[in-house]
Image (cartoon, rainbow, N blue to C red; front, side, top):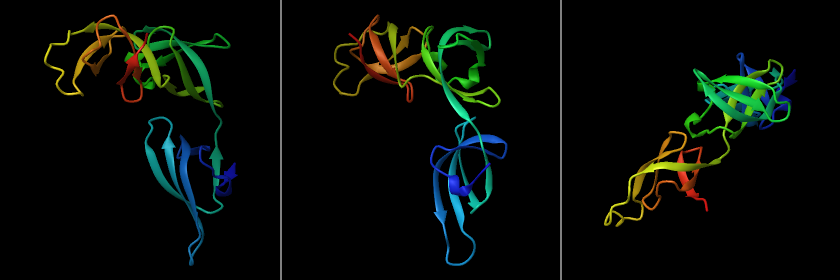
Length: 188
């Protein structure tokens, strides 16, 4: 157990039965009345930001959250199979827990966040940039490049479809930003 005096950005706590992380907090001492702490909490299960006010000195339950390295092995039916990179333990996750799963290929390294006391996985995050091969791209038509921001849709080796500049051709290897699914650069 901790109190509001222990608040800091990045502290993990159990709020209304849900694992949350403090994103921002401010201790307020008004001229009249008791002190309080205003907070913004990120729900670790769905990513939503919650605002809450705690009275100063209120007791809160902290939780232990760990980040662990895993490697994607293969997709199977309704989920994905991963292997811990140090212990070689394998786990299966539901598709809903993996963001941008269509950008993940076999052998991809990911980072998972676990509630350590319950051994429950909260999130599975890909690296910021992944390197993938273009398996299908329409050829650029001469004259379509008048504007500098001309884009076309391509299909990647994982089946994902993203928008890239017109000069990208089939069988080229590119980097893709997994946060906004945007084109990064060509890989030589």
